[in-house]
Image (tube, rainbow, N blue to C red):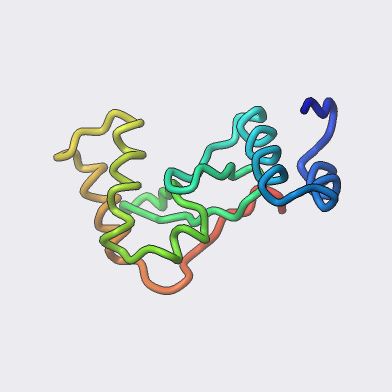
Length: 120
């Protein structure tokens, strides 16, 4: 389905009339078409879904490989492979300082943390 010149909010309104599976697939196509990233666990686009930001290092950096829903469903150790996958995409070696900073940030997180909602 092609929907030219529609923003994410307009698409969300349209999707209220559609089946959930179709709605999710359409939102993901629109999001990735706009260059949005995806959750490395469920594949949903951050163009429409709230993503969890994990801060790492001393420079206030953050990364968001998981949507908030997937992040909440996983424990700290179970989240690590998704962060490793993100760093593999960045071509960061396993023994890099970047990976050590990100892994420390993941293991230090508790509770809700911070979220990124690209629709706000």
